[in-house]
Length: 360
Image 1 (cartoon, one colour):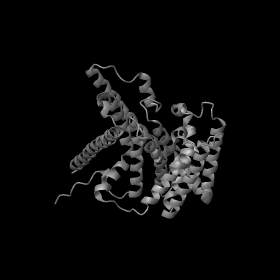
Image 2 (tube, helix red, strand yellow):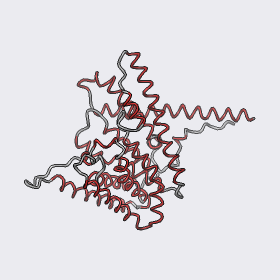
Image 3 (tube, one colour):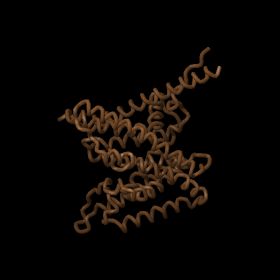
Image 4 (spheres, one colour):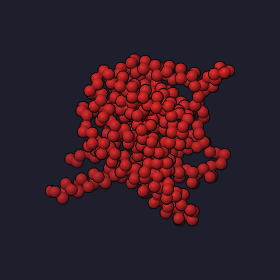
């Protein structure tokens, strides 16, 4: 009697479906932000919780570890986990695009500077700042976990103090050019993004211990804070007229106005999915796959973003729509990731079977 083949590693159950679902929601929203033309203003503003949610869930998953890993071993492992696939992916991307453009008789779309900045995770091909955020979190995660263990109930207070110092720093240098979107691709951004997102990551570590009611109340508290800041930022001092202050203006680097909204919505979403323990297989399988392969999907969406600009957008004309662009980016990235992972998983199983046969 032959043993039935095991499902691919990324499709097996056993993961916390709540965190998988929230990570999938975050990824959907991140891809939505990169569509052209941009989605309606209300939708674009609503989905601003995406990166804080992703960082919060990463902190929750790290906090569920039984013990704090050795700092340098974990940091090196995670850095390699992010850098190796990123460099391999973009090496293949630049090679394929170069060959394709040569065949078509077009000039190569990327300069040497863009290629170099991509491998250094600078501006490059775009959308790489999130990778830098998670690289910094890979280094900080064991430190934050150890701080949580040693400080006990004072841990939230330490996070508040750390963020307070960061906010004071940002206010002190506001208007100098240091606190601006232009700095997002420069080395100084490592500090300007590591501290606030490190605090969000630490906050995520306490998330699994919260009940549904506590998560909802915390979400509402953060949204009340967001509402107060919205009134403050949007009210004219002379006319007292109020106008919505765009969250996007407070995202690079992340400020309290942006983070309070993102964390508030994230806690409410966690409260909404808290009772879930399983999903219908038709939904649970794709959700687990998206969550487990979220980084691969993110890299593929960058490549497909450029492919859309090269081949689809010039011919779309009046039919160009953000929903079509989103579907192309998200489902195209999903399909490419599934294909590559499936082939790699099958080749891995074939190698194992051959080695066992040789051993016999």
